[in-house]
Amino acid sequence: MTVKILTNEELKALSAQIGKIEGKTAAEIRVVVRHKRHWSERKLDARQVAEREFRALGMTKTKERTGILVFILVSERKFELLADSGVISVIPEEFWNNLAGKLSEHFSSSRFFVGLNESLIEIGEVLEAKLPPRGVNTDELPNNIIEE
Image (cartoon, rainbow, N blue to C red):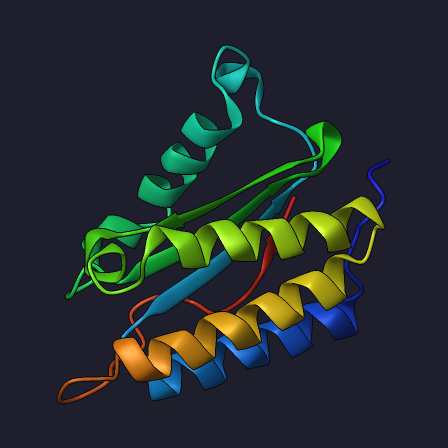
């Protein structure tokens, strides 16, 4: 049996945090916690698995190409931060590298909720300044955290 790394309360809190960020920005954020890779992904590296997940979740189809995925592969102690072209064009790679370093510190101490929550807050602050909503701000993707 797989042990969940986030409680139901933590999942709800993170989903609410995503909704709050998306209400103030043009971004669409998803968090996927995968305990182990699917058999069909055995020959892919973690980045390729995350890219497949990004496409499978419809994140490349947002109106302004503003999807952001935080993908965690628990069994391999790896994670990936992916952003679509609308985000990459306004948020420098240095931001994502710094954020990855902070997440890595939290995750190495099994502080998954704290790491995700703090990272989402940081992402939200940058997005508010760099990617405010334009016109009607439709919620294009679900805000729930996927843990499988």
